[in-house]
Image 1: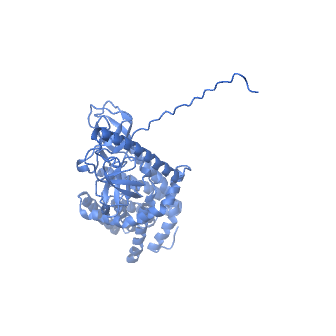
Image 2: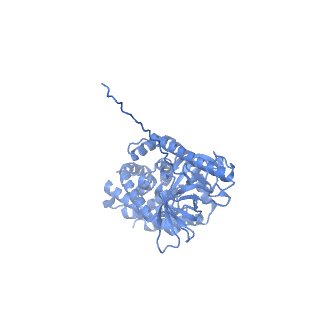
Image 3: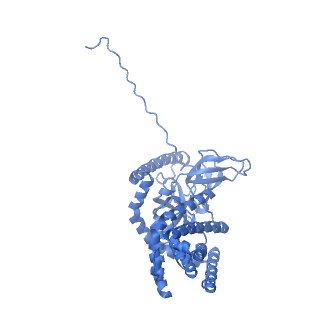
Length: 305
Length: 173
């Protein structure tokens, strides 16, 4: 044995210290939170600098992943696609508002949310099996804990921790993420749980209701709009589990948001006064038939020479 | 002697922590990526005696707990890394089968990396932390091990020199 007694004593002291830290944290002692807040406040300028400096390198890695397609082209197409989707959503929203609410909501506001835009400065490491991002806006911009975070397509996550100039976002793909969901149209409700990927699990709350492939899910909303504002598009049903022994039906959901390409997000700092209902359901693009031009040619009676 | 070691080791640990949080975390690497701090701590642990390895593990775990991405309670990584550091040193330190060549150390680090992550998963399950589906966890564990295998040979010479710098050792790998 090498320095057996001394090493063992040191080990015991360190183990007791670790267990003490775990106990303090589980009991919600503020000192631990202050430790983390302080470290994040120090780290956020480094992360911001890292994000700026490493952007070309990140783009290179992304290009390799996408087998030759350039990042700029993808971003341009994504922006164009998002713009078109947004136009479609706005159009549907405008129609619904004109018919049902007689132009109360603003077209530009879509869901009537007051938002703060933020840039993603860091993606969380997977060493702890959690799915998080850090954004460059924090409590100085009015962001508070438990606010809804939106991507260009729908839900992105929820604000988990806030620091003066940055905030930690728990992505909707995180396995511990839970959100009350409502199926657009039928109004059935359930709980959506992240899986650590772009998919999620929906557990319906009522065993007499059913769900089918293609159904669109929206957020149900929370009391005082925190953590979740109502009406945010979540995803659509890709498969349904009809196990005979299940208490209520479960389904696999594909999120609208692509969590690996998040660059800019919006934090909802105040929700709409009224529930936007199904107005934010993304509309499937319709194919407009193109009229076929038919040309009739009448042959001349005498052939030309 | 101790003051000198601490005054050299502290900034090195902090710099590696900043690199992990500000640089490595910028890339969403497939398969979960790797933790440079974890590999550094494991390398130091395998090259040091048990007391030092325990303190190294404790310090690295404390920094990993400070990371905003730590999902479990504060102290979980500290405890795991402390135990891992001690265990790795206890098994590997002074054993020529492990320390005689770089390949042995790399192999040891990769296995230790995997076992540390498994210990984290097991303790997280006991503490009620959600980690995702079993398949997803398996894929991440496998991915992290592959990354550790790819990265360790590159980092080992650097970390070995840092070990020599901190502990004033005469030989480096």
